Length: 172
Image (cartoon, rainbow, N blue to C red):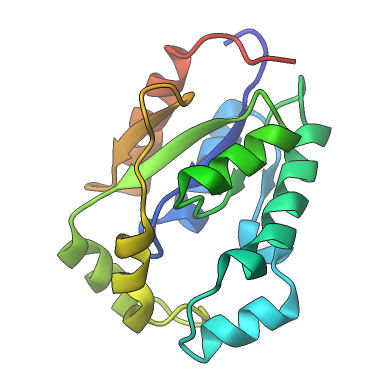
């Protein structure tokens, strides 16, 4: 890659977005932003209570991530964001047209197991079913790659970085 991409590491809760994102950013030599940090406090309170967010809850969050991505255009960056629906990814692309996606995918049982062992996160495993129900995988006309979450963070990152190398230069 000559021009660094702005990469959104996406997927359902528990796929490792917060683990893989910083490792991928370091590998690419670009900054990392934690998508959860863009949530308004009201969203965190809802999710902590086990209540799924509505699209209306997500718009300001997605807009904030999109603004960050726009600011990184031509410079590169990695941000984590579930980006489960096509409409969410479209909203991110509207703000940051050159953004690409790394969709972390995996077996539901593996993801649930990983979620049950993490500490201090506001997303309960009870919301995993709603995450999978909402998920609309990347479509063929969307710039991005799917990466299986089986293996170590280093192995997953290696697969993601290699797949990103095959994408065209980002749109400025």
